[in-house]
Image (tube, rainbow, N blue to C red; front, side):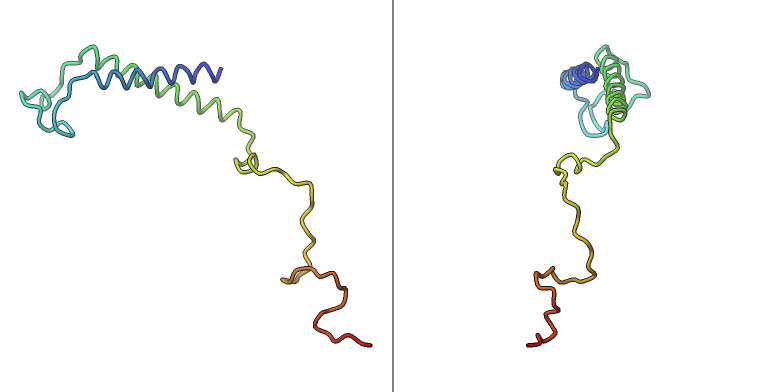
Length: 115
């Protein structure tokens, strides 16, 4: 199911890129310029390309939300790092209350050794 939605999503993305590149440029950024008053008119005439672009854009957003929902249902609730780091079967060392590393000698190294 997820693979089918993902393939449709990718096809929509490629189609959207193609449609946007086919459309006529209106000139300067944010609709400034372009001449003829077309960019400054109250409502521009919607051509077939712009209508199709809107339809594909809505479908692209729907597939994006659908993929998010599908993946959220599959999520295990764990962290991504938990999947990358192999789990160890060793238990952590017992806390001795000391900042020094454990020594192999049982005696305190700061006390003099009695002969």
